[in-house]
Image (tube, rainbow, N blue to C red; front, side, top):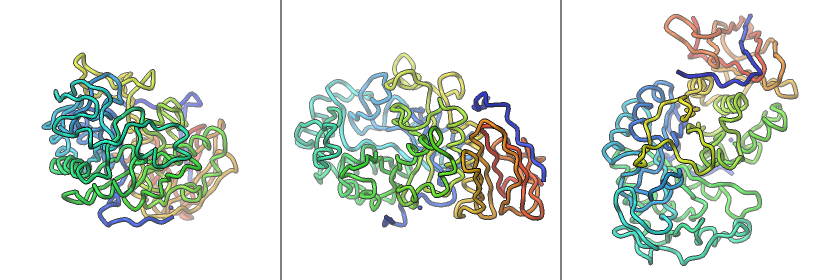
Length: 473
């Protein structure tokens, strides 16, 4: 059963009275109205399939991003999945057959699948991988030999600011660095991608893209058997020679600055500053950006908001899904006590089936205030911002053309005001606190009068949102 995540600020009710442009191939952009990505971090394939059928598809999420599916080293930490041993589709999340079944079931639910792809490096050390493949020092029998790797050198922290070559050719935390400029390595990587494409995968998240050149990634992309969506992990740092804009011609890019800036604004500054958020803040062009409030890395390094921020986290996600910038990515993970802790596992290391809200799996994408805003995003897609209002501090409101309107109150007091909207007169469901049901709204309703105005009362650290596909009458 889904539980509310509002902080004690309150018992909340809503009483209502009266995007450098980038060159992209046509196949690259996340297509259609359903472009919201949900990252089911460390979920096993059976649980992903069920979630596509039961929730993700019906709620309007367009993509599910799943954890790396290739064979990896053994261990209880989450990051073992990011240390490949071979490209067999077998991992602690399931078998090749279960993965194929998951892709099929998600497609039936109208959800496309993005596989997290680790192509910069291989596993450290030696041992036996999850599917029984042996590996040693730069030796992965049947996959790579020593000549497929760069010479051993470690990336130093200072290299990120001073030496792009070392960032791209030395080892990231002692992980053997693949010679991605080699055509043999590119062919092997493309073979792995094409295998996943044959199972129905629709796209790839390129892990550690910063540690490869854009040309290397583009070369692998050029060897794919069919078009695929790419989104690249490029962690931005001020003053660094490697910047995300350099990768935008290859595919979409995760906009890390978005989440970091949202945390600063929600914790230290004023929501009123968000009026030109996105490209106006020096972020990537919205046509290639994949913004997020948090992801699995930032949850663990403290650079963004996380589920532990309660109502503040929820409001930030509401803002992201209401604001016209990029293809948003919603995080869904598990409770962790230390940054290395893996997902709940059986004694043999297999990831357990997911049970949301059981004290282990957080399932942030199912928080009603977040899940219901996916339909808002889909409904208003393609419209701009209108009727912006703020109190100069932490209360804001804005419309999305004549298709939606949202009010966010991040203050300790109540907000009561008559707002000018672009919505046609009528009765609308407040999708933050309910949705449109068979016989009306399951939560509060909003009346928009003949002048397209609505009088709202919004509780502390709460929000109200309405859109034309959730009309009560």
